[in-house]
Image (tube, rainbow, N blue to C red; front, top):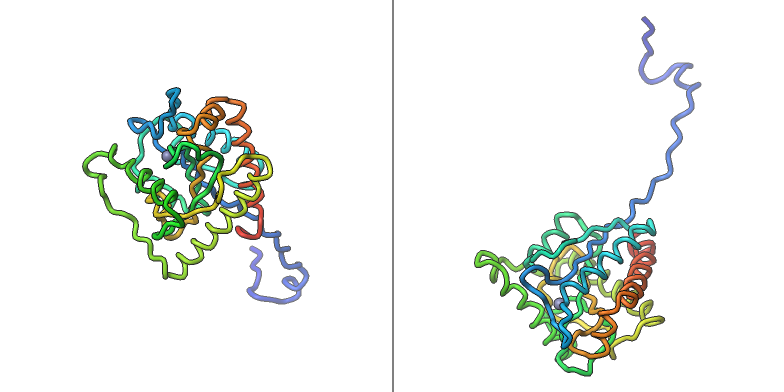
Length: 252
Ligand SMILES: [Zn+2]
């Protein structure tokens, strides 16, 4: 039997050390969160367009294109017409160890003239009345939850914690990149970057943002969101911006 001695001798010296493989970059994990679903229709436009359907369609198209880019791994909180409580959405992202959480909506705006895309991050103090009202309305989604979920354990946002600060910083930079990119081709709401106390953005360890693709309370936005080609266009822009974000140094 051939026994090789440990640690040395001529034989060991002759064998070149194993070459180090270049570290393969694991693409960041993006969780897309189509708002509402099931018994919660979300906003309903004058022509009967339901937010839950519009945002699911957009999110699915974003997923296909973003996953296809190879820049990100992509998963969804829901891919069918089911209801999820807000804290369940947050938990899905946290459990998956998501690098970015993107909630997709097309709500009713506080005023009928408001239209265009906008993006929101978490802040206990809203940037303005518009964002505050939007968050209040959005947080009411849990009225459709079972009794056990209603008012359930809100994820504590420990905003002074270092990790939470990093989370918040990343979310702000992601929001800016998305809005800047989307603004080149899509109509934006005035002051398209805002923040408010959205329950669905409260994961302290997952950078989170909410995109209002448009507002179903506005006639023009509703017409746009009813049109499949327009939804594809919005999805393409969001997917492409998320792809370049995922490939950027922000998630290196
Ligand atoms: Zn919504």
